[in-house]
Length: 476
Ligand SMILES: Cc1cc2nc3c(=O)[nH]c(=O)nc-3n(C[C@H](O)[C@H](O)[C@H](O)COP(=O)(O)OP(=O)(O)OC[C@H]3O[C@@H](n4cnc5c(N)ncnc54)[C@H](O)[C@@H]3O)c2cc1C
Image 1 (cartoon, protein in one colour):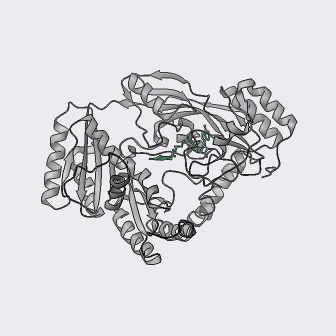
Image 2 (cartoon, protein in one colour):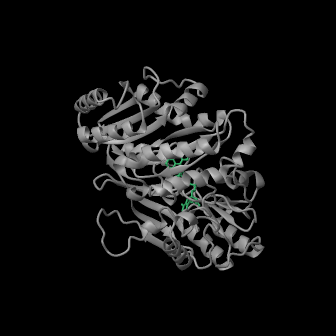
Image 3 (tube, protein in one colour):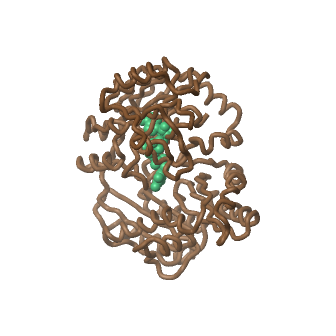
């Protein structure tokens, strides 16, 4: 592949600007700045301009020009993915292609339970459009007020409802994609069944913008739940939480939507640092589970079934105190506790983060082994573990020892990654369950994928993008 690493020629930039029209681009430093930095400040880049196309045809025209002139293109949605995937390198050779003006909801077919949206639609707006039609679009995550559908699919986002509805990959029935050549592939099929060869849309989902630009998607919708039960439960250990999940599934079938595990340390940080956050559970427990169940039935029977499972689990000492929310505001408060953990970590100093997945049954062993190793490697390190236990995804974050210099601590990032990712791998796990590889894990992933897997990925990349213009330096 032959990506040129010098600034694009004026002739190329003039053609891009002409294709986009007056409002379709910017090169003003103050307007470009937010597009050139990853939200945590870990990655800073430069770009020749920010392209802001408003139509698929404009995306196509820009990509065709970039292909002709070998100009790297960095697609960008809400820039929330946290692994440096959506920002350019510091050569100034690339353009950033912001999708935010492609924000139309093209259609909603309630009888087919599908919505067709453009890539720049903010996730929360898609949820709202579905709800207006009395339907649920179940993808839900902390960044939903700013992340976009194109970014969600390019990172195969998961979120809190994966157990019940699957991740972004499972929610897309069709895609429209601008290929690195500039050609438009219209794969906007709204079909549940289509066995006509390779499922091409899956190539672009989770590809982090390295194979093409997603410009629109057909997404699956579901009935709005009529009954929702949300509870916070104290548990003695992660293995008990896994048992509780099995009991709930046996008791209420596939109604479990979210099953979040939160350590006592993480809950403590949220209560200490974030205003208004408290735990309604009586007493302290080493671990907590936030569970949410949803059903299409009238309110009542599911709550009774959950109470009966909790009573059984209490008798068998799987759980301690359990509190079921009895109003919307109580549901919100329980979720606020979970979400506050993410913000609260920053108040305790530097944090080395891991976003791993292992089979659900292996989570307790993973946590025990990882704790043992990191505590031996750095006495005083504080494990802040929480995450989507229901789908095996744990945010195994490591807060610095009290009083340690933050930079000195962050200097151990690679060695801590090596320990934690090594254990996840030993359990057949993944080193990136949600956020993708971006720049952050591009080198490291080579240790954890076989030569055949890496070769296949590189073959796909060079076949679809022979000039290597799409988001170079990311993923492969
Ligand atoms: C507070 C917070 C909570 C989060 N919670 C979760 C969670 O629970 N589960 C989870 O899975 N993730 C979570 N994430 C990360 C999540 O993956 C992203 O927030 C989101 O899916 C990315 O969308 P975005 O529009 O911001 O994409 P960006 O960050 O802009 O881009 C991400 C990648 O996709 C590419 N890209 C963007 N748009 C396109 C497009 N149209 N075509 C081709 N490539 C494109 C970019 O080049 C980049 O490689 C969280 C992030 C934050 C900040």
